[in-house]
Image (cartoon, rainbow, N blue to C red; front, side, top):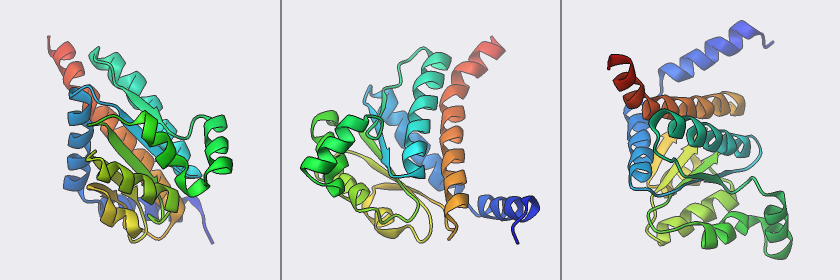
Length: 191
């Protein structure tokens, strides 16, 4: 039977097994995109859609505020009209690809989030971005699924528990925010 201790023990165990170098590489990719004045585009389904929005909210506001340098973030899941129009008129499997066709510019980073790593619309978006030569970052759990093999960069949570995966995906977003805000904060506090 689940209780707080069991859940937190499991979360702590999975956190302790994360590949820190992989996380640092992913943050470097985000930083490089931001410093080159490109956009960071996020996408996902269900809980991962909310994580995609959370990333853009935190990064756009906090990084811009801390550094004075605009962080250009956008999520492909925040316009219900666009999502339902493409889902109805084209297909749900292509809901993100259709948006990338007009929202993505050369050099923009596409961050695709999928707990299982097997969401068809997420995979198609990564394949499209890869074909256009854009950097792609896959955020996944379980065995990484197809996403882990398709994305150019990855943050993988090796865990077969969706809620633990989603927790760590959110933690990654917070780590990225802190890392990209720190240089300016350190220079202010030391100056």
